[in-house]
Length: 429
Ligand code: EPZ
Image (cartoon, rainbow, N blue to C red; front, side, top):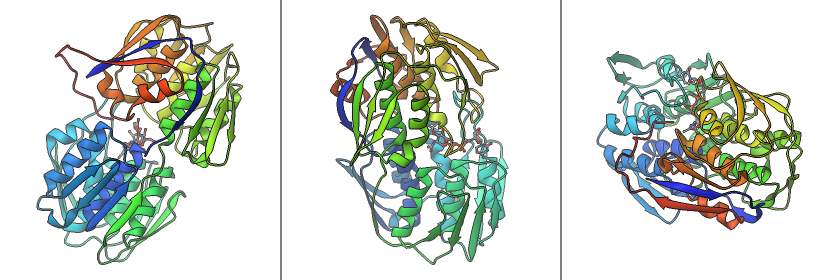
């Protein structure tokens, strides 16, 4: 646990290289339970990765993590029980259920707790398992899902869900027959999961569209894969460049993945260009307000960039409205930004009316979740004086070394290990 100390004012310049995606590596590590030996490169060294490795080891896998490469040998799996304490720590560990159910016909999991973003139900996950022929029973907070052999089916998602789409794919890979998932989420991380599965011998097509088709196979084999770049880390750094009126370059970015973010940055007067193997940003001294924007499933504007944009527009010229349409309570950053002088009206917790002020001032603020923490660090970059962002534990879940990357771009950001013992338990995301 630690805190970030930022002295604002520097216009960011220079370049950084973007690492592997948190939201791709987690489902792909979960998918290794379906196979034998998986070698996965470009894995981010973040706490969610280490937590996922703990779950794999708890299931009986042999896992090594050297540099940014993880090697998983899943041939020794001896348990189908997802441990409550690790599910509490990282709610997205429900993503293990599909693969365990698909390979072993049994999984015991605990209801993942809610988190700072609001309720995080898993009804769509369980519905998909039922549609594939599993018997799913719930006893209190414990979920038992079992099936002699899952059978391919038409799975219609009542609502677009990244995790439920991924879990349905993982459950269908070894099922008997063909599965069609309709109203599937289209996030790039699902395309990366498909790449991994196909390389391991699965028959999956359509990821990135609303219809994913999986033809069941008997087993998966050894696989080697490189994780896609993290589009939200890239977007976070683009927003950092925008807030400071900077000129930066990001290496190892897939432009198509960040286009929804680049399009909204253009609305704020920021130029984002695609270069050979990089994305370059040039920002004006002061950003233009964005009359109205909303988050939504890909290819919409990602909810994981909403807090960062709320911080960015807090000092734009004019009034902006951001509507959060994915989560019920992704608004913990608003009160913290207000401590820095931001003028944001938080209408029913999902609609932010932002009146741009000339500049924020430094303050002592707290991260309440991963992207809230990132947004506060960005706000500090443009603020007068020093900002201290506490509860780094949340930020470390999704950013390998945000302070080092920002320092490389010329920011005055220090990471200080806090001495206090009252470290909060990271709410899951
Ligand atoms: C993934 O979460 C990401 N996490 C989230 O990133 C991201 O915000 C989210 O997708 C949306 O893009 C990982 O990939 C590990 P959802 P996930 O299921 O799969 C509701 C970050 O900051 N829903 O697409 O949990 C749900 O409540 C994190 O990196 C149901 O109603 O998100 C939400 O309102 C935060 N029933 C909406 O769907 C269900 O069974 C979208 O959630 C499942 C979800």
